Image (cartoon, rainbow, N blue to C red; front, side, top):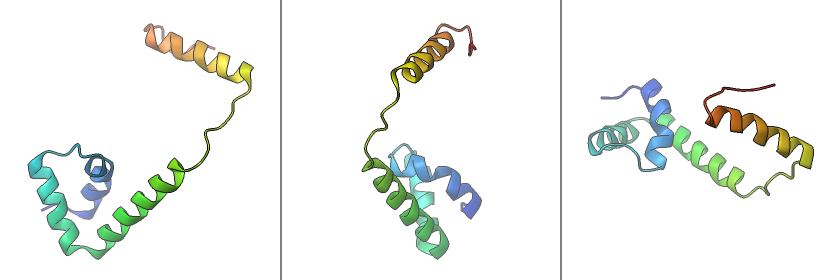
Length: 82
């Protein structure tokens, strides 16, 4: 059986449907027995829903360009630059 610490590490995968059948069943079994983890799962779902309803931030053009420059270095294998 999973312990609470393991549950917190699996919550995102559980919510996004990325757990194997075995792990999903173990996760659900633990939820059935642990009020604290059920509460934690509800809080995580509420947080994700709340954050998802926020408007996208508007970045100043120079900040967006700098981020794109730095990410381009990561994707090319050069690592962060600057």
